[in-house]
Amino acid sequence: MSGPSPSPGRRVAAVVVLVPVLVALALWAFAWPAARTAPRDLPVGVAGAPAAIAQVEQRLDRNEGAFEIHRYADEAEARGAVEDRTVYGAVIAGDRGPKLLTASAASPAVAQLLREAMTGRASASGDPVQVVDVVPAPEADPRGAALGASVLPLALAGIATGAVVTLLGLRGVRAVVALTGAAASTGLVAAAIAHSWLGVVTGDWWAVAGVFGLSTLAVGAGIAGLGALLGRAGLGLGGAMMMLLGNPFSGVSSAPDTLPRPAGAIGQWLPPGAGGSLLRSVSFFDGAAAIGPALTLTWWALLGLGAVLLGGALRRRAPGASPAPGHTRASVPAA
Image (cartoon, rainbow, N blue to C red; front, side, top):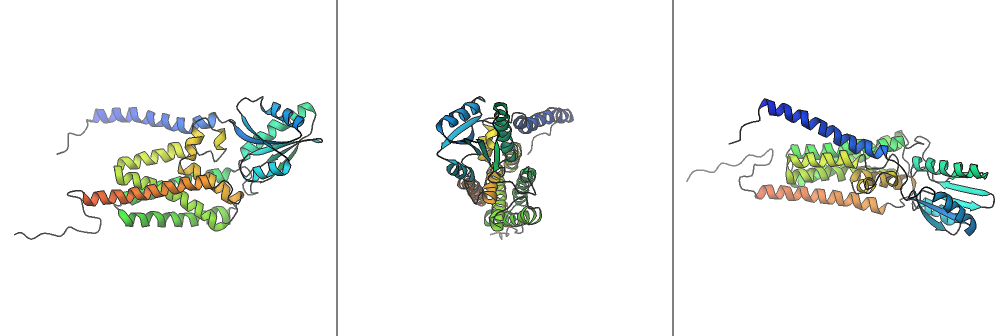
């Protein structure tokens, strides 16, 4: 028998207490990273004559903890590091003044930050600065707003897929087929919109669709896996984790290295952040630096699907387990 239901007074008190707590958590998750955005050990390259490099490093070091400086032999090596996503930009110290290499496709916000930092200091010293965008953002999305806005819909699609599969009572192989099928179709639709129609992502069409699909599967499988093991509490836990941590900590609209610690690192271990990083690599950098986020998404998908299969097996073995939807328990004739 179930216990007595809470009194109306207690229900009112629960609403009065829980709503402000949820609002506080949401504000902390979304407003805190946005309010504390700043460069933190941002990888930046320098190249040129030793004396000129020393001057550039001295200028960059004035912002303590803002930049992580990588030295390169010449401009070609520094440009290669930008194209490989090893650094966000590079300063080439030459006789005709400094040259700044940026990659707005990696982060328009960081490219603007580096441009302001170098042009401001250089203009004060009287040296002109030549700015070269090595890997530019697409003309349809020069500020990266559309790319950043794609994270939330994919997270919502994954959350909805995982929740629907769980609430419909799909288990085992049927749940796995539903999750992978929904993720694949979501990837195709997302690529058709973002790549073919809007043009906010470039690169190979099928690779982009694969990234969208894998990102959706990682979220959906994670949600469904928690639901299979923990029930509705797992759905709530997984949804809150993806929405309150994965989305605002993803760093897609700026860069993970500009978020307060440890938000940026946490975001890259969750599907929304890993999906955003992988999408940039595949779309704009010919797959450079794609291994890490691809592995993160793959592990989320595999572990989630494994949890779905495990949860289904445990329910089948549990005594008095309810039959699967669409099946009725056969009656046993009396002896």
